[in-house]
Image 1 (spheres, rainbow, N blue to C red):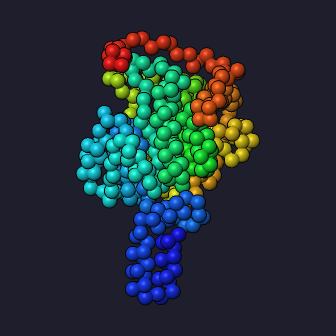
Image 2: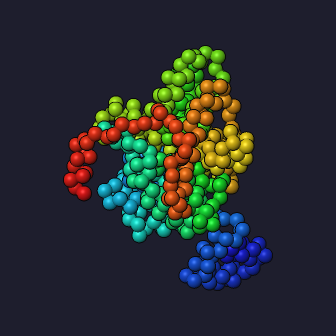
Image 3: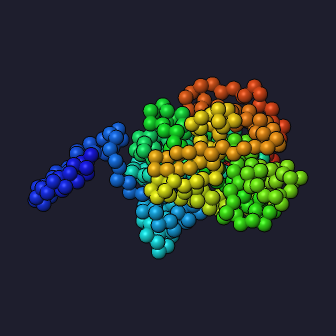
Length: 401
């Protein structure tokens, strides 16, 4: 508001002395606070700083994502925040700051600096928290949600207060539950905009596209293989038929679908060093955020797959919340692309709907305080997870607690 008034003064040829006095007047702390408050509610054009805040930047995924985001010229300020003292985000940020690109690095360690990290952010990436670790790869998404819900809820409330205009990208697993937790928390704060909340499904669409292109021999950069429905192991539905490749073997669809759904477990078992696919997840997440920034500040940009609230559920398999390809523009999501499905993909989608609804309901209940009940139609035999055996890392953790 005050910036616009200053611009009007200049356009009316007011003397430089008057402008200087006005600018000094604006420097008053009280008026500066009024300006920040007005920007939350007044429909005036913002002067975006092109800032991205990575919450959980000290985690494995956050480190990799921050490394790639530092190389993006479109991002002027990259704020790295983490409240876990074990992640040591200050040291990581110092390391990343040595990369000779124009992006400026800000680092914040501790809950006391969450407001400063989020202030004036255009995109907030919520990552970090607890991830699936071997040999406990069979942990259920519901149990993982209980580990991470407080992390996501705290950041969401802070976003509603300090950067309600920002686009929020949720990567902390399980994304299905945390997405519902986020949107209902924002609704309670009355700042929810369905165009500006996206669940990161980039890793699943990237894996599906790599599998499709490796079989057909096509260039992955020229292809897009969407993954619809949800982001969890029992809710993701790869749409290989969207590739329209004549040499794609239809007999291998079931096998490839299982590879996409079980990719996390496969990586856990192969690496066997208490890590998941953090490198590919970090890269896919960074590309997801970069596409959002390009859509906001350059031109409408296509994103392979994101968990979003649909504008027209009747056009999206009658699902109000579903992962689909989207196009991001200057005000957030501006177009939803719903791929056509063949018979096998339609059948898999119908089998996955109940599990997605159950995960979304779990997140909603913890946001609004309702009592949670398991979905009555939740019949998903493939989702049964064997109990985690007590491994050495788990044993040490129990002894410490």
